[in-house]
Image 1 (tube, one colour):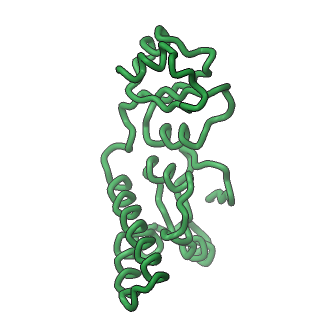
Image 2: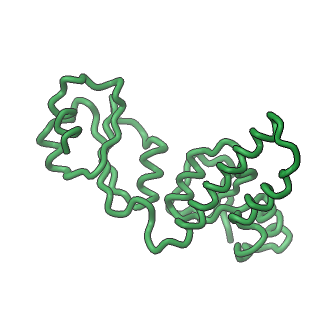
Image 3: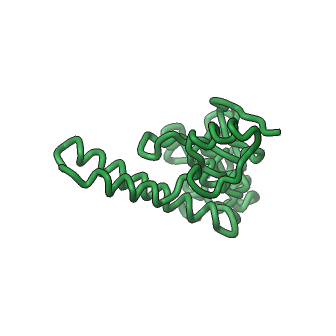
Length: 183
């Protein structure tokens, strides 16, 4: 049996499907986590069809988001291009880009961030940020350090390939920051 979690705070390794109502809408961290983790993006119609069937359905077909969805919307809105239509066209262009990325990563042989070693520097440790979740689902190894733990030696020891830093929280004269920017 399937487990459905409505309004769950984050996508996890156990997540298999993420329901996206409208690809033109503001995209959340859940979308990016689903993309990085190669999760299946489905329309609300998928949930209704599974309910009618009494079991999970194969996703291929009409219930999974595809590039064809964005292109069919674009063709149907070719009418006037006043201010409102121009905004809709821009949203359509963005949804087409999102769906291109989705189709690429959904069928890629490895996830988006495989091989990355990412250092996340925070003022103080707390639960995972949405960015850490996205990176982990995409195959990155994520290490979080607080400002107090940050040192050149620690950064060298971790052999990071990428760093995410809240620049407002760091002292610009920090030797660790200087080291990170050069490497």
